[in-house]
Amino acid sequence: MTLQHKALTHYLEAALGGVVQVQAVRPLTGDGPSIVGQELGVLHGHDLKAFGYGRPIQIDLLLNGIPRSYVLSTVRGGSGFGHDHKADRAGTLIWAHDAYGKLARHVASVDVGFFTREGQLQSAGRAEEYFLLMEKVEGAAYWLDLERILEEGKATKLDVDRAQALSDYLATIHAEKGQDDQLYFRRIRDLIGHGEGIMGILDGYPAEYPLFPPKQQYVVECGCVAWRQYLKEKRARLSIVHGDFHPWNILFREGTDFTLLDRSRGEWGEPADDIAALTINFLFFSLLRSGRLEGPFRELFDLFYGAYLERTGDRELNSVIPPFYVFRALVIASPRWYPDLQEEVRIKLLRFVHAMLRIEQFDHKDLNRYLM
Image (cartoon, rainbow, N blue to C red; front, top):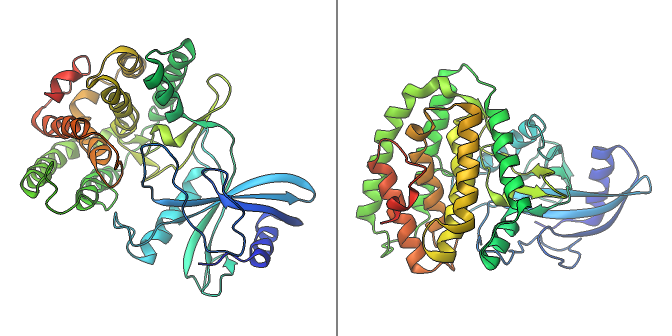
């Protein structure tokens, strides 16, 4: 798809309600050259996470003479994970436009539209591919904090404060409960069977992958179905959630001031999903450092998890979180998502997956026993 300067300017003036002068268009990650009038590409960052669903570009412009920045994002097609059809990708972006502005601290969506075959940007009708226009928010991704801790081997007071702030935030949004049995069932069903869920992630593993052959994948699939039946009894837990609360979707500025990106998979869901999405990364970075959860990452894990339990009094969390850890660990262990991991780290993550399917109650105070 070719992005034409004239078409982009015309669309932005209609969407933003003013006179627009486009200054630069470039891939959001990195300081690449302007790509106005060229085919949109994906510029991968230098972090360990090498695959993503989005294709964001940053647009720097003058709106009535005032400098502004926005992000325009599409969804990668042909990658599997439930994005195979145009309708899949359109639904993802239409839902995002509706949901982003409803969550505190989340980046706002300005508009959702589509590209025509001729490269024009419009607001529905003769749709060829859809896109999302969002505000550009400044900040540094939280994974950079974790990478620094990995390199330095210690957590600062600010690291502790930020972990506390994130825990408090989730406790606050999860306090709003819903009453919709079918919606909770849908979220559990999507966790397991959606293209972005466990089955889709499994389908993204290479065929006959030696570290995780088909017979082991079959065991995981069967174990997840058993968990689905158990979780359906927990429908009263339906809560407001973010849905993809991991360090690549959290931008920090000064102190504990943060903004969230890419709210995914539903406005409502299971709180354990958000908890697992973040805390699996304390384990992940600690595995990279020493092969087990210890030191500064153990400190942050214990603080975050313990503070959440203390504030929410959620006595069921440890009995529902295992399949959500299965999902997150499968993503990180996947050579498609994280191609440069050491084999030993993948093996421990896959051990963790199998352990989560065997237990009835997660012990957050002794996580290392699930790595053996």
